Image 1 (cartoon, rainbow, N blue to C red):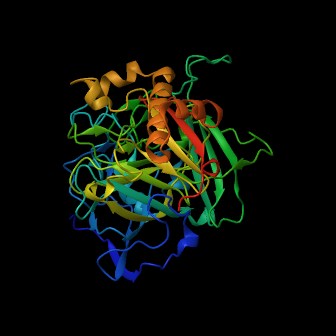
Image 2: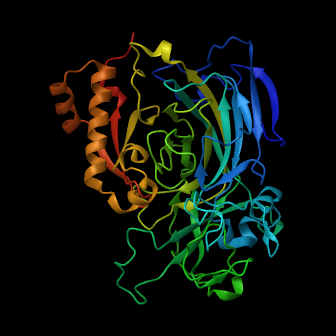
Image 3: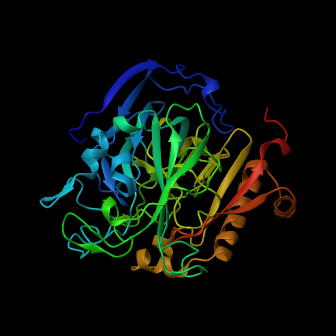
Amino acid sequence: MKDVLVSGTALSLGAFGSSAHAASSFAGGGPVRTEKALATHYHIPATADTVHWGYFSKSLKPTVELESGDFATIETLTHHCGDDVERMIKGDPGAESVFRWDANGKAVDRRGAGPMDHPLGAGGGQGVHICTGPIAIRGAEPGDVLEVRILDVWPRESGNPQFKGRTFGSNAAANWGFHYGDLIEEPVKREVITIYEVDARGERNWARAAYNYRWTPQTDPSGIVHPIIDYPGVPVDPKSIQPRHDILKDIRIPVRPHFGTMGLAPVEADMVNSIPPSYTGGNIDNWRMGKGATMYYPVSVPGGLFSVGDPHASQGDSELCGTAIECSLTGVFQFILHKKATLENSPLAELAYPLLETREQWVLHGFSYPNYLRDLGADAQNEIFAKSSVDLALRDAFHKMRHFLMRTQNLSEDEAVSLLSIAVDFGITQVVDGNWGVHAIVPKHIFPARA
């Protein structure tokens, strides 16, 4: 494991109690039995030593190894902190550690899965998310399923005393957004950053716009000019922009904190761009992945290698302009390993896709290519950005929900297809992550209670 400050405390398996989490229909909910009497609760800070930026990798050394049933409080940082250094980095030792960049180099040099000598900077920005981890689960092997419970989520308070009690996030209407090239006001090619304020103490459940500005060419500390948003973590020079403060007046945006990127390392490639999601999760960008939700992932590599990042204060389905309110968060998670040998004749048998469970719903995620690394050949990580479509993602969501209904509810195909049309809601998760997403939601209450 990395030589980093990761603290662990033993606690009763019932320390959080079943009230902290919507009971899992597949694993019984509440405390999980393990071979040891006590679980361990780890705290994993976000520092330059505990994060990897812009990629998943089966070769990364774990930050920590947990046992099934253990808990972890995990800090996450948004890769958009550089959009307002004063509010989102200054005075925060963890953020300052990760974003440190001067003429002599960067604290986290690789940002993306691209070459280290890329002209934009190491990694080329071929992947952008700051991911905390990875976390290994002892005994996890390909064919197993990892259950990840999100027990709590809260915003990271600004470290700048000037903004005490407040948190800030950035929304970038960027060049990769679905809207780009289809604007009607001049200049029709523009990128706009909107900074939002969130109450860090939880007394206000809505966000408000603080100000916005148009992106102007930024020269990073290494001397490279970025005419557009093309490399993560570039610090914006406040003297180079014209902030507009009188925007979105009296509009309240509901805060629903969640993690846009959360998942396991895939086996198909050693260095994988963090932007396109896939069968092991990753950048799914579903706002329902917040407090009280559970994610199930098929394990692809030994240990699973779970990472989490891309924290959001709020997002709508589609994430149309390219980003959410990108806002640093901290979460409490519990990890439960389901071994392949125990899955036979269970609802989790044959699970080959990321599955989301909330108290009221099951949510499945379809992608244009369910496993693009396998399906698109040697150049898959570039090809995926040119081949995505909502049609393909909808068909994949249909296939997965049909499988889910037939497998977990013992329905025939004809029964499942009818139910798909009359009781399942399909929505566009995102159209900006290379591998576009459509989710399918089925309410639990329509099914008989399990014995």
